[in-house]
Amino acid sequence: MHYNITEQETVINVYSNITKYVTESGYDDIINVAFFINKYYLWVILVIGFPGNMATIVTITRARSFGSFTLYVILLAFVDNLAILVKTVVYQLNQNQVNIAVAGCRILYFLGNFLATFANWILVLMAVERLVAVRYPLKIKKYLNSKTSSFAVFLVGAVIAGAYSPILWVFSFNEKYRLCEFSRKTSVFKLLLIVYWTNISLFAFIPFLVLAMCNLLIVLVIRKSFRIRHSMGETYSQTSNKQTNYYVSVQRQIMLMLFTSTLVFVVFLFPLCAFHVANASWQVTPLTRAYAAKYLMNQLAYLLCDSTHAVNFYVYFLSARKFRCHFLQMMTCSVASSREMSLLNGYWKRSIQT
Image 1: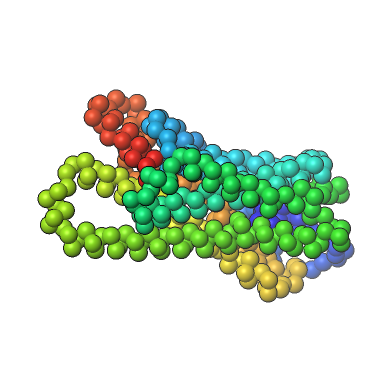
Image 2: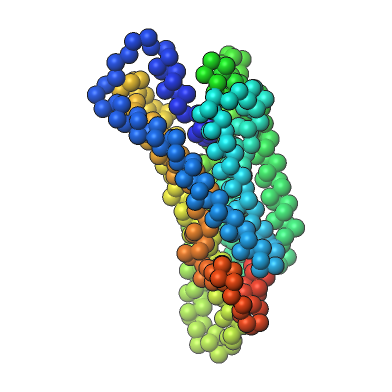
């Protein structure tokens, strides 16, 4: 599973199965660093990500214009916050050895995995829609709208929920250590392997590949469009006006917001994908430096992966000038002129159509 809130259980089991153990030199230093990261990184993500996602929701909502693009941005921020909260709550329950019983383990782990994966696929939907918009600009009003986007979100959410439904019966509660763990019954072992690879594929591998491909195709389409415009530069300059130039600027802002957020996602998710690919053949002996190093790499990969739920607001703020201006205007409580408000609202309204 990609849920990284009980990774210490693996180490606990190693110690509990050995009555007298001797660790390799350097093992304790490395494993203690890994334990430190595991214990505190979710709190850092919560402190940074929760207010940032709330700021995104408020900033977009205050524009008072809703459509496909704004729907995705608001929903992504909302789901990211839920994912962070559920992961932090479950981690604290396990750390404090709270008896949440089998039902509690199954429900919370299902929600945690579902929300984290759903957030990734919302970003995938944004990238696919933007690719269609830049590839077929004359058809976006017909095919890309709030109704279509809502249906796509519902369909993807239903598929993910169905794929993760086996979690509701493969998890159990360890009464001895008061931790959630996979069921140890032999009858569910094959199902557990299927759930594991389905989980990793839906959460990491497929979104990583789709987003990387979408970004590449978007760049190629934009370059081709730019060359055509450049070759028609003289004619375009004669027919263009302020309205046209403004909407070109709008499209550039939307593209920057999406491209930077998906690029950050791909970069942050790559270590986890690489770790799981290597993990299949990366065999280590318990209580050795290699074992501790592998565990530390695992924690670092999850730290970066879970950080994707916290960074989108800061990416939007740094990459999109209009989003930044709107947020700063909201924070300073300044009153813009009617022309400025019209332009800002026009930015979000235009995003509905594209």
